[in-house]
Image 1: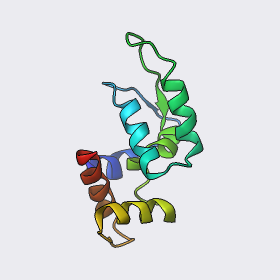
Image 2 (image 1 turned 30 degrees about the horizontal axis):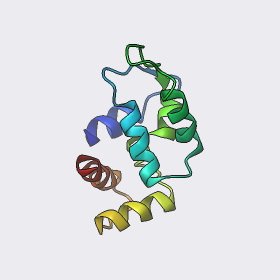
Image 3 (image 1 turned 180 degrees about the vertical axis):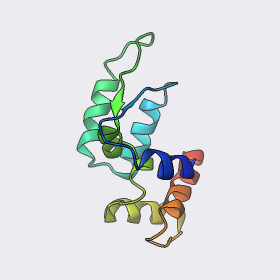
Image 4 (image 1 turned 120 degrees about the vertical axis):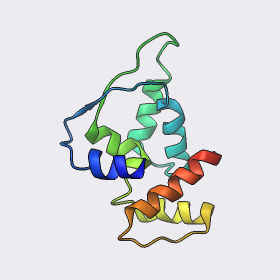
Length: 113
């Protein structure tokens, strides 16, 4: 999963549209906010998510928005606060030049969340 995000999604243009294949949006937004509670874009996205009816199709996001609201798309340049929060929860420090290490730490947290 890290390889796909880091090697295939990161090089894409920000205007590329992402079409959700299943409803992970709400859960991933809440996970993002559990680690980055002041993320304004994610807070707004949660508000939008909560307006959708159960049978309504979820909107497409462009990659630029996904990079703001999805912590898995912030592995190459995580904020200091996000790094510290992940460290507090995992006790693991990773090489700052290794976005793969950060991604793996995030994925481990998400698997238990």
